[in-house]
Length: 180
Image 1: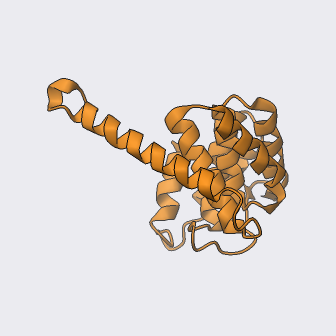
Image 2 (image 1 turned 45 degrees about the vertical axis):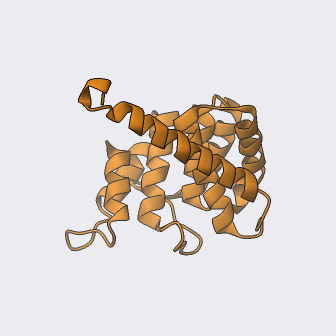
């Protein structure tokens, strides 16, 4: 959009700023509550991912990233993918690699395929094995494109649909984004 297109760029920018502000306030206000709950940690990783891509990296975001790296074993697969991507976007290369290595180590592999399985269903974040695999592909392609898991995971994901459809609308949209 541009100013010539009816001022949408200004309105969109104002909306973006309000959204980023609200998400930042939510993250700062909730980052130490409910630490025993995996879905809360997963939400923190997703929030960091959104903020990293929307705003870059501030010191408070880097502190949040370091804190979440310490929680990596407690994060679900999809949250580890988001965290690795966020850390990479913020220039936290060694932390991003650490999380990405954890993600790669959790892959279930055969001789020709690889995929990721969530430990338990995450209804809050719509976490499924197909979605976890797609997000893992996205993280690997973005941060380590020559990783040998990439073609194996793509092969698995391409065979994940059943009876010519996906179980939810989330799975194909995340899968298509990762494959693109």
